[in-house]
Length: 340
Image (tube, rainbow, N blue to C red; front, top):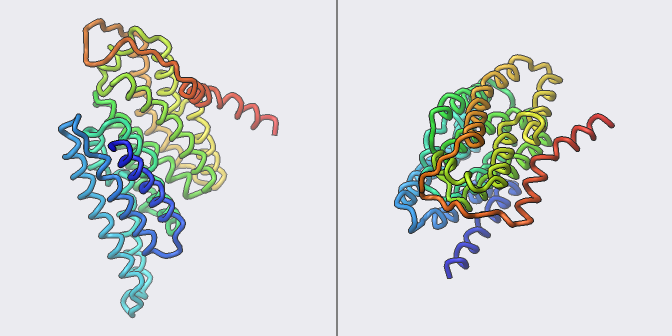
């Protein structure tokens, strides 16, 4: 029965996102967002964690407020009076809507709820929030936004906040939350230039995040000390984790570098030089965080008995295949780029 209700709500989550992004009216888009919110709430409840209810309430309050702002801005935009027909008034209402959509994604400077909600959830719910729950707000944002001061501020603040706040964390869920904020900044900048690059970026980011979440869910890893303890007797798992983690950082020769490469190239070709320079410099702080955790995982050997189970090996062919694709694909893609 437990699996049946989870399957039902997962189906509602997926279908509501499709309703939202395929709707022809703002009302249909808003309706899809609301069904999505109501569908994920039961999945957040867990008897294994005392923090799950707190995270669910925080998530519901923030999402409900953002949905209210979206609905209010839609009504004000459709109200064709003399006051709302002025360009500056319309742009203000659009700014309200875009701010609410950015809040739903958990992108800085509206990120305040995101790491706190992640901290109280299990890995499968974290995976949903990190990947699928980003699709509908980003697609709706894609419909009515262009490069302006607001979007530039959101992109740069995402880089700064994720770098500075992520370095000081010991919780793996918060580290992945701040990592997601950084990648959201890159995705927004790619979305403004070319939607195809955004799609590539999101797919690659989702594959790498799924790999990491599956590893940490299997090994019961939630904090850095769990990570170091769990990897001692699992060299193959340690290798998969470190390679995926470095791929998520976006450094060559891993697949995670490809969408950043395409984004930088597209921005430079559109004569935007300063924005990619600032993004690259700020992302270096996040890369330092990834490198420090990866090197510590490789070198540290903690033999204390912890919460984790240390006798687990990955025999899943699907996981091994996904890891191989996520790690080695950049080599083939680079060869393809050079031959065309």
